[in-house]
Image (cartoon, rainbow over the protein chains, first blue to last red):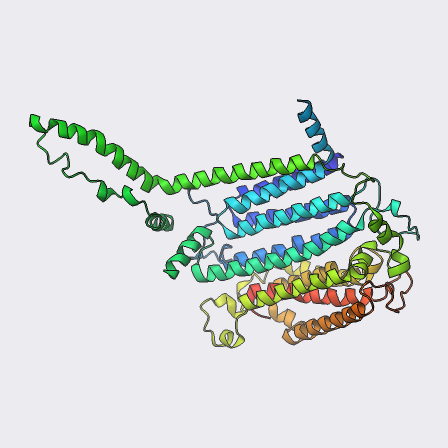
Length: 98
Length: 130
Length: 321
């Protein structure tokens, strides 16, 4: 087990846990994109460059953009002119701690 | 005690697979625990990635290179296993399709019920049905 | 506020049966009793000792029940997942060692795929040879999955153009007025996009065309081109993208690619579905023109995937191309 592999895998697990912990949906999507980038480096260390290219383009690029488009559609991202959206959903399902 | 030590050394030797399984568990936890649909979809993606990591780790062989044949050297003992790579390549594209489809469903649910909370959606849908 | 109302609804939704407070009222409440009367003293003590327990229980259930159930659910979820992880880890500890050359996965199939790749498929990238020649049937199914996913997203999210024109939709964002909504004066985004969009297109084309001799292929290159198209429409708005990739162009490219792919696969299956005896010149391994049928399949798949990715984004953003 090389140190580099260990660091990458640890980052992977940290990203996965922190998505569950974060309250903000936008932050969790950005963490998910970071997860995909780490994943593409892991594909390189596993000698699978085809997967690295695909994961970087698809996982970090297109999937993240689809998540952003969804968040925009459900008004989870605030409008640019500072007007708070009235129909903003709860950022997280955990209502009890609020 | 000896068994535990053996278990841990085996686990440490298979560290990629072990990390993939822990990742699968984390994804499953977020699928169960979160009420928010977007978080559920992200957890589902984590489970996908865990399976791909497991498959690709099974195909890796220490000290060998990616299966791109260089200098006409076709000795299979020089290259890693190309089969898991091909399977995972298929899987990544399918997982994008699944993600897009479930996000589209989420959008429609939000249009109808104006919430992302799965409990609330279930409650409203049940009330609508009655 | 919203929170409370939801909990009220949920409380009414979950029926607590015999614990409703009005049913718990005893025939005579202790306040109305004449407590000074020694005859009634025993009754008040009974009522004082009984009612608070039951009432407190009922109150606790109605007010705390939902929350307790929530916490219990959470604990149970974590417990189930920890059990699952430990089960999986115990299985992993019995698996063959990571990276070993004598793993059961490294067998004659893999040897054949690598050693005969140049001879039989004309590709130096063994993965490309495997997924489009040896297992071409598999890849056809994958392309179908992508196609079906695009169809279902269209069915779910498409907004009728006539409705869009007449403005019958409530949400003004769906009207396609992205230039008003986006921070289109964002200088950094625009300059970066001006630099990156052509690079993304060229790199995507390179990945598609070199899919037979280097890492890449139809799916990754197509995703790159699709990402370039999406970046263009994010930075400059949909109108600028529609100048070179509008509705008609999308339908033309997508239909042409699917038809070419289907025809190639039909020929492929007709010739035995393993890509060996298809009488196509295999080309020089390592050059762009190599791999026989794999190169046109890669090109068709690549443009199809690019169209699908852009289609996903456009549907999510404004409900149609």
